[in-house]
Length: 443
Image 1 (tube, helix red, strand yellow):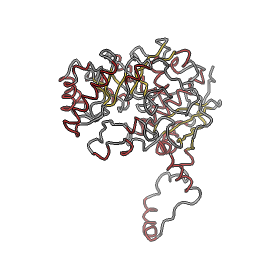
Image 2 (cartoon, rainbow, N blue to C red):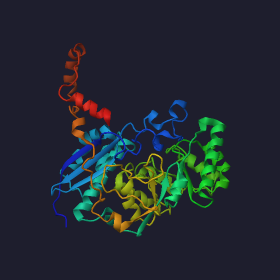
Image 3 (cartoon, helix red, strand yellow):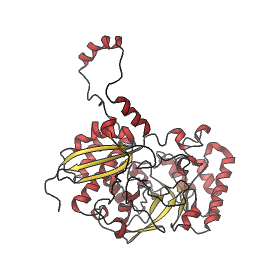
Image 4 (cartoon, rainbow, N blue to C red):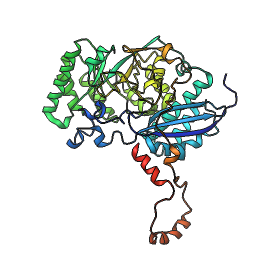
């Protein structure tokens, strides 16, 4: 049993040197299908950004980790994306709400961090950083109670968790035992009618490769518009595609309504790039989305994902989280409203099964024959992940040396220095600034 009195005593942040490890899915080696295969993106309107998603910076932030230690010495750990900017936000802003607080008070801690960052946050990186902090707290809570996170969420609803696989080789996914497959759409609206025809041929080829009944889905990665989507879906009616994912910008709620009006029996999904229960409220109330796909490492963590799922269940809308490895697995097995889970193919050619977080952990559970056994593979305290002793972690403290100045001087002091400062030559900081720069550049 956990001690009655507990306080957070340490909050540590890390980035990961190199590529292929941690919570930034896209920070992988060149040649990987995730970054260097034809995939339609919001940047496909510019030809020079079509060949590789790294060309426009999809991996610019890199992976990021948080470790939270309580007064009894128990530690919670989690990874996500955010890189050095995430470390800065934790140290300069969010840490003040954590140190000295009871780590079990996840609802209160989430609200404090979210509300305190509303003036610059609400979505994007600040909420993604809060998400990783929240997941580290849930990992810590599970270890304090010596229970897996899924039991803290209400216990399991099944003995096995089944997966579909996202990648460019659905036939390989079928052979590996997955219950369905999702392919990235290669071409966008700016590639005109030739690109449209290539998309149709691409989807037809993959439908033929897996047969008429195997669930085949399409990921459009926020890259289409309403007229193009309506035309493409119409042209693919005979392919029996299971769903069309993220066709539009996450902010185009009216567009999703138009899609549903044009194709009322077709399933449309979204939510991977939406944030918090407030972002999902309108999606849920509009009833134009058939499946919601929040990413627990981005949406606000486990604390906020529970709230989103509760809202969705009142409208009978399933929640099938985007990727996120074991963090999603623990959530899905605890929810009747989440029928299965996505596995994001992490091997370069998508023809084999590798850990979602690369080599960061030594025991990350992965599906075998398209499923994993809940009690056998998830029944460990917290999220059950053991950090690899050889993990290439770089302390966030090194990235913040010298630390940014906290606060501003009174206005009259700034004015007094203005003339002097304008005549001086600014010198770079002394100390290990050069080493810090090389670390940042290598992450």
